[in-house]
Image 1 (cartoon, one colour):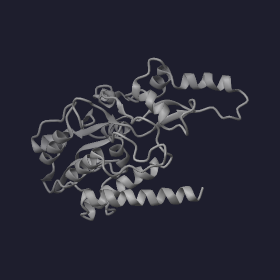
Image 2 (cartoon, helix red, strand yellow; image 1 turned 30 degrees about the vertical axis):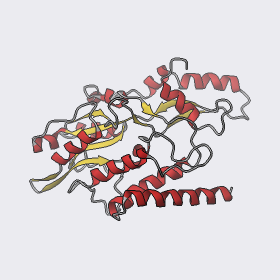
Image 3 (spheres, one colour; image 1 turned 135 degrees about the vertical axis):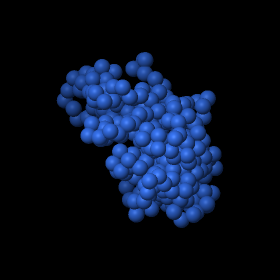
Length: 299
């Protein structure tokens, strides 16, 4: 563990119930990137995205590949998961003391503004009849093939590869868009963590197993970056690990999941109900405080 990158160490401490000791060890963590369909870019005559692009550059690119061609409406950019956007924040939405932190944060306002800007591209809102801008099961980039770029977790590569095996789909990946080029990161969302039961009769043996499960050897063998799929071996799979995970300092509350859910709900209110960002943040702060207070009262 002495050679672990800082983000893995921070992830180990992030979800502890208190500051004493170590309760679990991280195995495979979730990595993210930008998938793109070369066919859509070719149709619009626009250059492909590249690694290390900023959010502003990606959004500008999305504008250029959103529109109608040959009777088909193409969308420039899908954001699949709202937790990914939460994972870009500098700090937890609900800290270790169960204090809610939506208000008075530049990063919260900045990320919500980015989402609003993506949704404001004419023709880019997904037609899913759910008033949900985030749809993890909407794989238009390779099902309908009417999406130019999709921000997603690494596992989208498997879907793209499987689709390409049965069609002429031409795709690749670049790194997650950067908020700050001087401090390049990608979102921290989740991962696999291993712990020993306090009731285990064989704690030493269990720890030996965990040591192996968190080793680079096991992680690389059991979950290789290219999933051992031939079609992915020539793709830019390194884009998914190009930048470190953005793990905030300190510990998160167990109620961080509530804050994360409310963040996505807030973004959707801004997009579909035309609520201004400052009002949405203030109301979400109040709602989060109420929900967490009620949850703690029922414990």
